Length: 318
Image 1 (tube, rainbow, N blue to C red):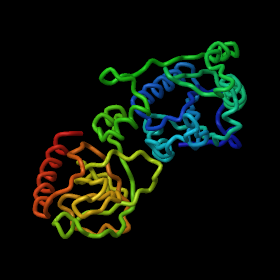
Image 2 (cartoon, one colour):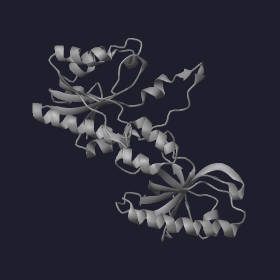
Image 3 (cartoon, rainbow, N blue to C red):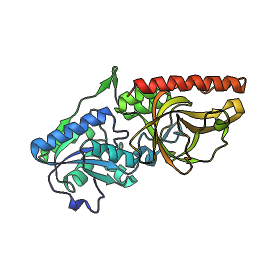
Image 4 (cartoon, rainbow, N blue to C red):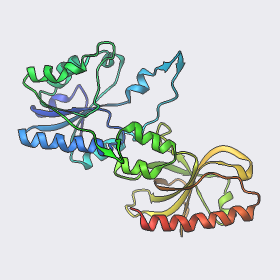
């Protein structure tokens, strides 16, 4: 993939079909836009380009209600993940803009003219059904299609992609994850939600219970974490393309009187040394809430049941 900055954009061939957005998650709605972008570029013999930002606008602009600051904003995908998924869907050229207050101050038509037209020499513009960019203080987004067409640029507006009557969006993905509904999130995304992290030394309580766990320190703490709970997961070791079955716990350990959240992964039928290893953990289904048990034998019994349920879930679901 070719990732361009504003200072080396001249290396990109002139004559482009462009779309603009954060593409957080690159969910099935985004994938529909990408297919449309590729179709338009092939039809008009143009180079398809995704214009995006190095950080989410909400991370820069902040905001709040009634003088109260919003909570920290969490993303569905890191930049590296986004670009990998974009490439998977046939996008080989990305313009990554450094999102600043200066960029934020441009109206939609100014952004189009200064970036898409003058820099990218756009000949076609693909917009999502809920696409919106440009300054809110100088909002002229409604004028953008006619303005672009007046400059000789064709405009195509995509329709919403729905799942179970819901318009798919990054917001809906975050909502599903925060509710622990990783299966719904996967339906929105078109793939299982995943986290990456380094295995570090923990308290080794799982090993004493007969369920050795990898204590995972997340690579990126700005990603959305699913709701506290126990999950059936697929685990990839380092760069391995072969997943292993497992179950993960995210949250406290109330049976041991510990409230601090941990992310622990038990890989079935594995007894190797994972310290210092990077794991990719794909969430397949939620098994239960985090619970406090009255005794250690009761906890072990539940863990055995969780493992059986997880094996069944992982063997029957993609």
